[in-house]
Image 1 (spheres, one colour):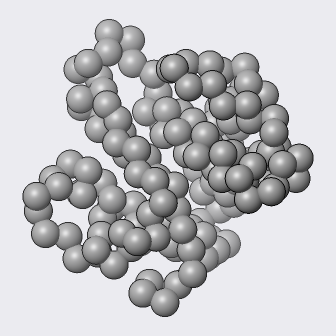
Image 2 (cartoon, one colour):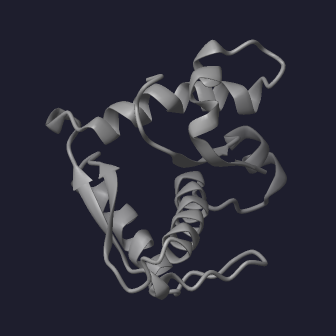
Image 3 (tube, one colour):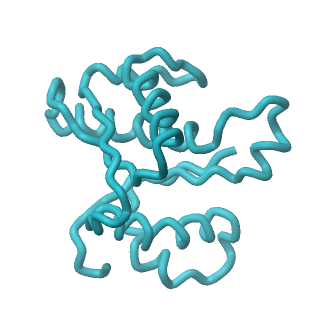
Length: 147
């Protein structure tokens, strides 16, 4: 991990706080996906990738769950899903979902697995020592904790 070359845009949704704060809460996975898509889209435009297709990798979870996530992804990517005060134009840098099973053993899946828990622990218990987070902290270009 120390020598791996990557950077990440991450979102942590505190499900208990989210459910307690909102009467009819949105799906936390969809919220996290939108946050990350916003950061990715803005970065692609900033890096001169406007109008170039970028594939967004998802771990395949099953036909129905993948179908629902893909539908939501496509709504966001087509600017059909607007909420919050920020309105990112996702059509500037087109995004396409790609669902890959865990058994494919992709490096992207492995990196995600290695940073997900340390990030979640950092968000929920920021005062607790977290050596795993310390190793990847400089690679996290944005971490959104919601709510």
